[in-house]
Image 1 (cartoon, rainbow, N blue to C red):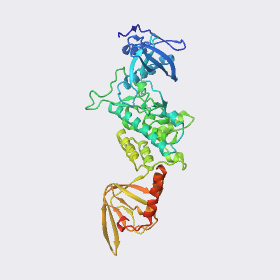
Image 2 (cartoon, rainbow, N blue to C red):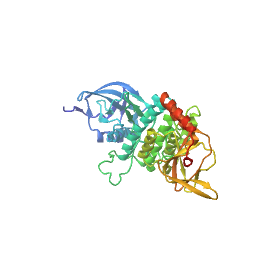
Image 3 (cartoon, one colour):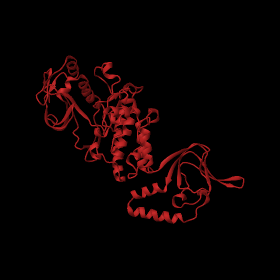
Image 4 (cartoon, helix red, strand yellow):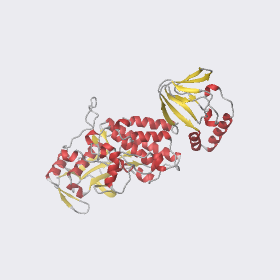
Length: 446
């Protein structure tokens, strides 16, 4: 079918009949990208609206397909930056082909002169409305939120592989469908990284005229309640993947606590808080009535580190830690010990067991003036487990031979894991544990 085209008006007619005359610079921008209007869509009701634009249901008569149509409000055409950002959002997100990023179908102009782009019609709710200010109180609730979080991370990681930073990741910009579909929306604040060696053919392209320095430099783009310190200070040219990692940390924080990172009725104070990057850990925010896995808190706070060098360098690294947590063991904290450091001491009453995640350790007993080496421990080995079931003195000492990482297992975290199990299985494990606690254990188990 040959597409019907119309002459491009130099004015835009808003929904309320308001007529906006485009200035010369805005008109040149629009005509360079969209020289003609199109008339193949049947436009329906508004399903979402804001101060800058609105979203309507549309029907493509050519393809017989329902879709979402996003347009600018008439008054937005008075601001070149808004028109530029709108066209750029369609062009940038249109280059990101990923299951967790809503596909863009078309960028065009309607017969009234307005700019629009069409995209997949997502029938669902935003993460913001789904969590509704509530913390994750149950294991099932936490699991569902983390499943959605991983899908968001997958979409953002793909965008990074194409040189695109989102720069405005928040619960309001994440849509969840009725069957678990998750989409990262609103790429209007996206930042394109300079091409890197080997990126030819995959890097997202920028075709619009560049903004003037006074329009682009040291301007704060995004939502202050979620921003990284460098973004809040307007250092747009210094942004890299780690800035989005911070935003993902903020998203995780809200999924856990039900509230954004920074809250204050004064927007200027919110921006100051974001510039300092001072974040209260999520387990402290919710208080003792809600319990999170220590490893999850560690992951969240690492993503939210003030200095970019202290964050995850890539979203893929964040995903790896979250998936490891979901596979099991996430309720257990991880500690690092230096070579030569004593982990447990013979004779002391212990309350934790350890799983070696990395490194080498040695189990030994003091005999007279010397010591007897009982065994060497490596990744996967467990020691000190008797302490979980019986408050008895350690029967041996354990020292780190190399810098090591240990998973710390306490009775409290074991109980938390049991509470998340089916009741019959938890009762079975508790019975075994009670019986094990009364059985004598070899000395090398410490």
